[in-house]
Amino acid sequence: MAAIYDNLEFLTRNFVANKHDERCPPAERVEKFLEEGFIELEALTYIRGRSIPKQWILIDEAQNLTKENIKTIITRAGIGSKIVLTGDIQQIDNYRLTATSNGFVTLIDAFKNQDLYAHITLAKTERSRLAALGVKLLP
Picture 1 (cartoon, one colour):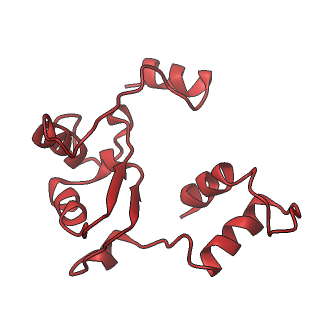
Picture 2 (cartoon, one colour; picture 1 turned 90 degrees about the vertical axis):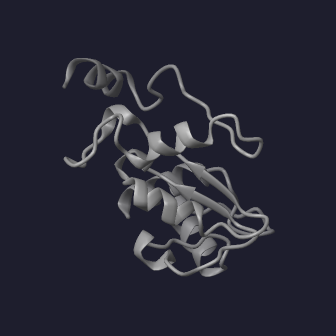
């Protein structure tokens, strides 16, 4: 879960802690959001059988999910929910998946041209120049 906390801290770094505009460390802000129920974190295992209405569902590292995992996630979206999946097919670290056999690519292909679907491909690595070089040079 460390990667999720890192990203939440990055996203909330400019939020204030309370209505009095008091500053606090990003980790403390994330904890407040979790305590107050603004953010919930769930392992994929715990969404089976659920219907999740009126929520933003964010799935990171989707390139490492199987077709079955993706179907489990998509079919749990209740009325008014939005799902955002992020991933990079050049960073698959699940030995059973490839750039053409993972659930992320399957979803992209299956949902193409559907009116309630959108897809964005970034042209370059946003993490760092070093990360971009690693993607380019390492198999």
